[in-house]
Amino acid sequence: MRKRHRFLKLFLAVLCLCIMGCVTMPKGFLKLSETSLEKRQLQMRQYDTTNEEQILTAIAGVLQDLGFTLDSSETKLGFVAASKKADATNGGQVAGAAVLDILAALSGSYSNAMANCDRSQVVKASIITRLGLDGKKITVRVTFQRIVWNMDNQISKVESINDPKIYQKFYDGLSKAIFLEAQKI
Image 1 (tube, rainbow, N blue to C red):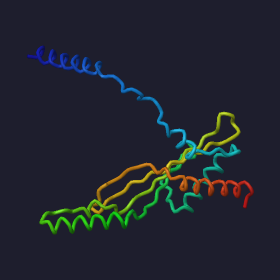
Image 2 (spheres, rainbow, N blue to C red):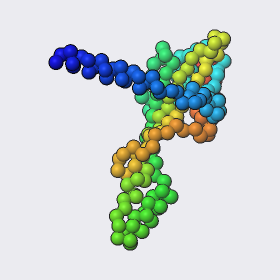
Image 3 (tube, rainbow, N blue to C red):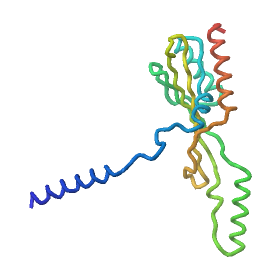
Image 4 (spheres, one colour):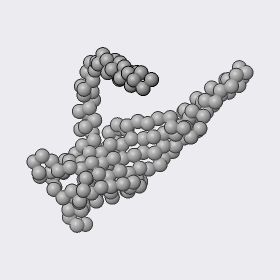
């Protein structure tokens, strides 16, 4: 009985290995998307300084000025994470859901389209800094994401934010803060 049990385990392990050996990588699996360079240019800036602590202090100030709460930071790693809560209600989405619910009620069926409307969101910012390869500049990379909850308090969206205006606002504030920090103002 014991040999049979061991043989069955061995057989299943060999079968799994054989099946996994038949799987191939999809074509273009490791190929970067066509928009990855644009996203990287949107998310990254370099500053002519080697004072990473000064940059991180400026980043924290800018995030707070933009209404974010600092969630965590690790100065030695050059990492800052922040978030802020915001309303996600969209008037057009609510009106459309109300019309669908009314039409469903008139036809004698039940619809709860209003429950799928966006209610609230949390916007998250993640920032990484690192000394450039030349040792003379610091590179800053920021990404913004959002998590949206619907009226039923379920997560309805998790997505990256790629609006250039948001990144421009952050980097404009950061450039000013770095300048003021350098001038001791």
